[in-house]
View (tube, rainbow, N blue to C red):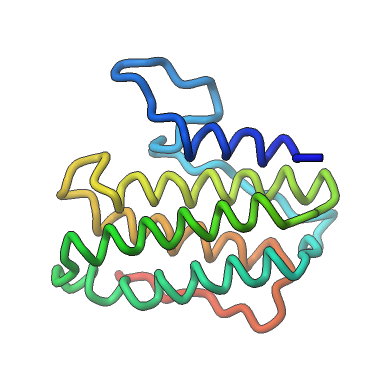
Length: 160
């Protein structure tokens, strides 16, 4: 059975938003305020192998693009490739990850923040915001690492 996270993200990833359409509260991926993530009674949430694999792939892609984006040297093709990679990995995570419901709810916030970064990276907030989308992705990854028990996870260094 698909989790509520799967259903939400399947809709978010496959249905283009109608111009000017209202977004349900808490599901505005382009929001300036990232959704918050909480620890599990002061401890990190347990993860499974699909989540580990998908998040590691996202982190590797962001790590490759972040320096060029910060230096103003990332191309539209770089941003498009990053957006496609993150979207594909999020779809993989949603399809394969099986967390307990409370952890799943926290992962929902991380993924919503990732998708906000993807929208910016893809130019949906304007070409001038593509580099800031990479930073949003890195911030979401750092939040994930500080809230989920992913062995060997290293936070990304953010510019400035």
